[in-house]
Length: 110
Image 1 (cartoon, rainbow, N blue to C red):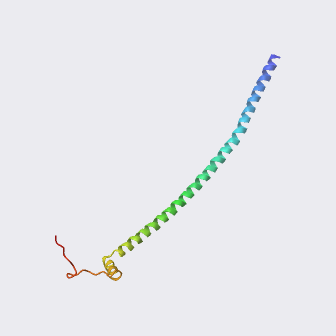
Image 2: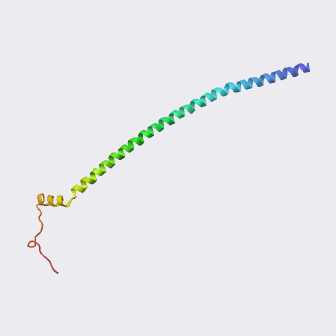
Image 3: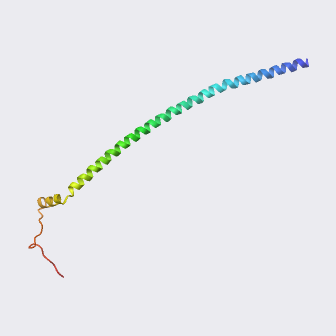
């Protein structure tokens, strides 16, 4: 009788151990699948972020080129507007200014 109980006890122990291993394997696979799913989802999210950021970089580089082009045009316009001949022409035509002559100048001595 004692031998039977001992054999039965070993069978139950080995049976429960095999059930525990099977349960552990059955739980491990779904957990790994969920982990793989979230890893793939985060990879897709990161790839999308990279694409969006690259698009923003391209747009900003385009804007930079446009601003540089506008700046060059403004510098050219400024240089043409400040030419001494042009300033003299505008002073004579619009403001009716003339160069002073020797007769129209007065020297003031202290």
